[in-house]
Length: 405
Image 1 (spheres, rainbow, N blue to C red):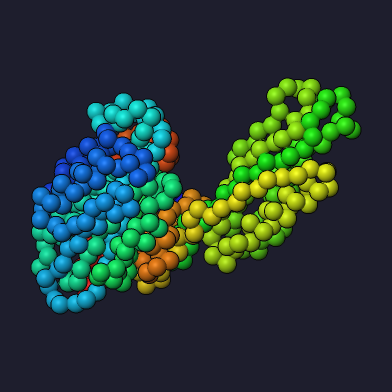
Image 2 (tube, rainbow, N blue to C red):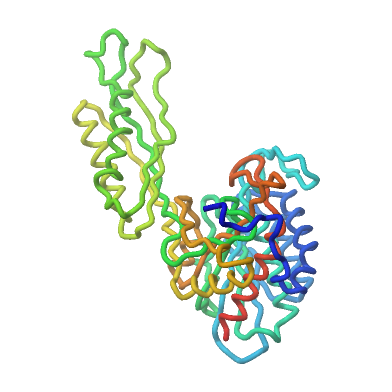
């Protein structure tokens, strides 16, 4: 329950080492610069230029132009010789949302906004890179920091993997975080197994026969067919999926008709499907089409269905999740700050990385209602408590140091 969490105003920053606390003003400066220049997926040119400029300034080896705008930085520790490689992933893209916040660092790009915290993710990754480069004597192994484009859509993780970012040297494990306004500052959401859902989508057009509203017997009413389909789709989760397995089918769009006394010949719907259990892959596609085909046949209608998979579920490795949890307990105030039951039906293409190598994706609490910083993700007034930036760097650095022990 939220009442058990630390009060954001009383978060103890003494758990963050002095060298990282001293980075906080720069982390804020970087984040706010990025916030002012948000860019959509695969268009993150200004963002990539800024990241590359900083890495070059610090003497960090890196490659640019991966999957259009992606960057991979490589930092080698000097403590003990080892061939182990740990990757850290941060996404860089923004959303097509007009910002409503009146702040000095408000978006300068019309209709585009960092409304999900990716500007913070990039700033945290930069801070991590800077600290590691300055303290190479404190860790062993190699750290790859992946600055990824287009998480929001259409997905930059898969093309980066296909471009070889997990190779040469081969990555053994990967970690990443998401600033999370569903949790208050001073908390960390981490769990083994499924954290975020798979997402699949479909568009369907019902092809009926239009006519006069007073003469329905001469028509095949696409609205009636569509309405029955929308209701029947809910039975997939209610009656076809094991109740222990969470899933959802949401029809978010339904368009039909032009006038009250005209029976529409076509109806168009768009929907999203979400689930945690990887064994359900392929099941929903088959069942959705069975329901649509059956109802259309019973009414004498036809249909056109387009169904596709966007992202698989985010599945955390047990060992790496335990690493993150143990480190996070040292950074947040008490064990009450660790939230293991933090699953969400939201999706993330970090899942593609986790299909390739063991890893852990976790949530870093960033909401602070006392400062009016608790609007949800993708809201035009989204913003977060920037204190979380230094906390994110601290967690990443401790994970690096402990992973190579």
